[in-house]
Image 1 (cartoon, rainbow, N blue to C red):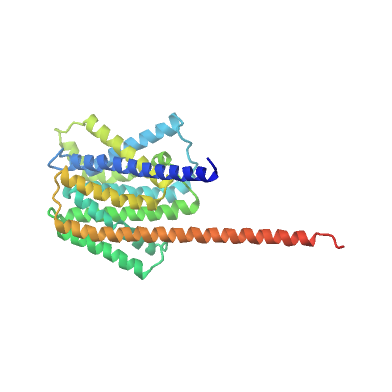
Image 2 (image 1 turned 90 degrees about the horizontal axis):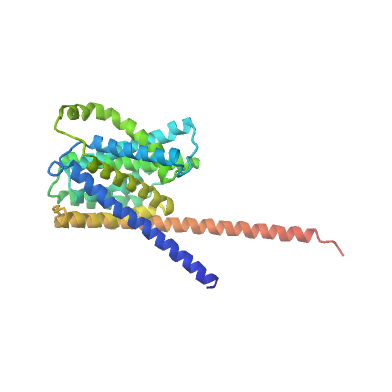
Amino acid sequence: MGKGGSLSEGVIKNIILSYTYVAIWIFLSFPVIVYNKYILDKKMYNWPFPISLTMIHMSFCSTLAFLLIKVFNFVEPVSMSRDTYLRSVVPIGALYSLSLWLSNSAYIYLSVSFIQMLKALMPVAVYSIGVLFKKEGFKPETMVNMLSISFGVAIAAYGEARFDVWGVILQLGAVAFEATRLVMIQILLASKGITLNPITSLYYVAPCCLAFLSVPWIVVEFPVLRDTSSFHFDYLVFGTNSFCAFALNLAVFLLVGKTSALTMNVAGVVKDWLLIAFSWSVIKDTVTPINLFGYGIAFLGVAYYNHAKLRALKAKEAQKSAQQSDEESGRLLEEKEGGRKNEPDN
């Protein structure tokens, strides 16, 4: 094929790869979310210890990441000073541990479908915290968009059949901490030029999460587990659950690393709709018309937000391309003028 054909094949290949990463992420999200719900729900497996479950996940991820980097040399470790680790990774690990703890706790009180509806507030939280830390500029039209998303989620909450105030507080807290973590990654890591691949991210962050989670675990859950003589650790259930969590963590870092956070946001909207449909049809969660109407409003707000972000990104890339073109033209003009000056006079 000619040059145009090769270019077309390259574009098609990138599109196929992007959709493959998205499909893997969505596919792995299902078993982790449903599995966690199954373990934590008192009407199912009945093991309502979200801190312990999260610590099991982090222990598994830490061990596997250590083996892949230090023992099998599967990936090269990223050199990081002690000061950088304490100032950058530790705060991110703390926020991540709080986000995981609260989000897993919400499964005890809320349905899978309603949790996905509440997650539509993520853009609102990210934008608000970004404005607070001056990573985003305040724009009235964006704030109106954020209010429309919040309004839609409020309607969905009003129509929720299994509404639980404590569960909503836990999930909103998880959204707030996760949004803060995403902003902190931009401030503490991306701004310093530090990039971590999926495995090194777990290698550095997972042990930090484990350390932070051990504090509330000792106070809240350890005394209860110690006095529960009937519990026996099920290696099959918790082993497969931890492996699913590890695979999902890799898929998240892979998706963002190979595509962009914006692609993940867009894919997240599709994933949430699929999970709502799955929880309604398979898990038999109650989904009311008011639920769907409110989430539909929030969905449109999130879709418009993603569209605006994509449009801004394209405009930024076009401006950068035009600037590079102007610089190249200026350099060629200078070389041409310099060549004329060096020509001998007749």
